[in-house]
Picture 1 (tube, rainbow, N blue to C red):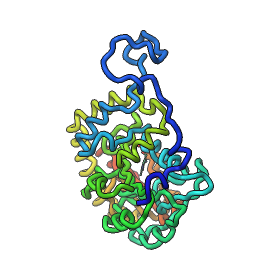
Picture 2 (picture 1 turned 30 degrees about the vertical axis):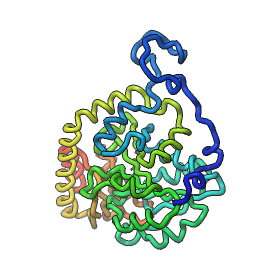
Picture 3 (picture 1 turned 90 degrees about the horizontal axis):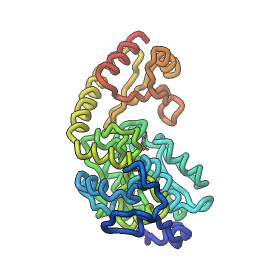
Picture 4 (picture 1 turned 180 degrees about the vertical axis):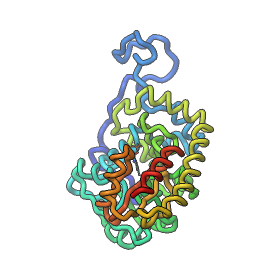
Length: 343
Ligand code: PMP
């Protein structure tokens, strides 16, 4: 990896971060007259911990990483944007990613006026490592990868991910939003080996908490310090911090729900290919299945008419004729299968 200083935008490297009242004081106190808060309406009158240390302690324990290697944000969409803002000089630097994949990498690049190069996956929806690395010239600061990938559902092969991590001298982001649904291990265990690695995870999928908006980025403490430097001071609100901690402390709940989703996934994988309107289903390591159907637009509209919403991906690169179907509860999946039977 290049020196971090050569990868971070010079203005970000040189700037002084905003210092909030709660950043400056550490220790015990009972009278807080430092932050222009209202003394009434406890506990919501107080600003939340800007660095979310209590929550990070629990996440560190569950994920087996150091607290200093964790960044928490308003969904993983926040670190996606911050990574681009930290490393990519608008209209000079570039990003390389894959197609098809999660749309927000490109949107965040466009917002920041950063060139976004997409390398098509191969016919097995796996990485074309040679083309990817060829596109990753000196101006490319970040490679965004997603495994299991959205919308294809599969894991990118591990040896190809290692090749990218070993070869590319800039930052490699592996978005693991769906990793809990996969039997393959996370790349979190590789953080110490690869100083250029950032792993993204989220509470929106397996943890069933998309509504609270809690995204996680894991990386070296040096990279995390850069993200902390440029984030909004109180980017994760108190309600989210409290609720996330409660959920992490009651992990069995999530594990039970995860088992149910995985068994429903198996059921859908068996039932969908039997339907007349289904041409093919793709292998999945996520909580959704990419399904090629006889006529994606018509079937999508018919489902909507019956109050069943799936994601029409027919206009996405390599997904012609495909719907992306999230695994629901048993009765929801029944309703889907019943409706599709008649199409
Ligand atoms: N990464 C991927 C691959 C996703 O599919 C999504 C959401 N669909 C996200 C990140 C965003 O997750 P969050 O809710 O944490 O912002």
